[in-house]
Image (cartoon, rainbow, N blue to C red; front, side, top):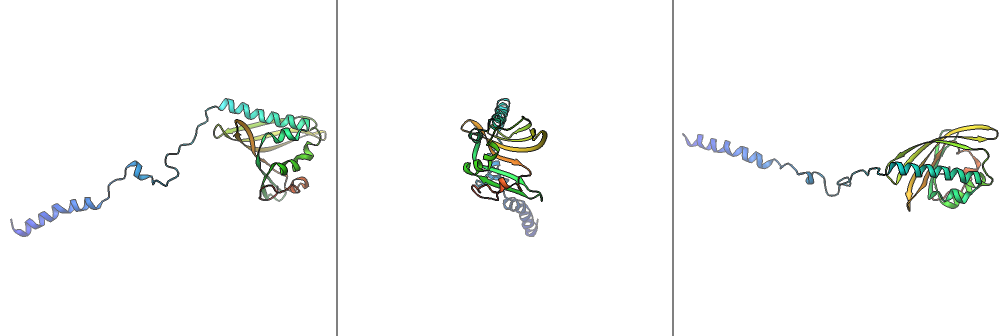
Length: 193
């Protein structure tokens, strides 16, 4: 075998080793997620007490209705985690949202609680539990108003605070043009519903 052939064989034998050395090693599972990745190690919490949570949320609706029937603004306010996000829209279809502190909420709601609510109100809430401390409720309601039945839809975001479910956001269409709502103080910022 000539020296040239021997050199070529040595060169060809070294190429695979050089290629392997140039290819980075496959990262381990820990190395795939950078340490600064906020998703590393996070798993979505599961709902553990669904039946109990649903019963407690239905109690919030009942207590809110009882406060309305009695004209008890303080009892209604006790069911809210302030500041509360108030969301509505106007006749043009423009959405409005504002975060109201307790004083702003009470000022806007005082006319509605100035006398007991006539007639009754029925609810058909659809509760979606995100966790045992976060829930979204969409509601189809009907109430007697001025001698006729009125139906509508609303939604709430509820949070568990100090062991109790409280309303964190109230969402209902059509209040953006109402003088009572637009005259309410601005709370903690945002457009006035």
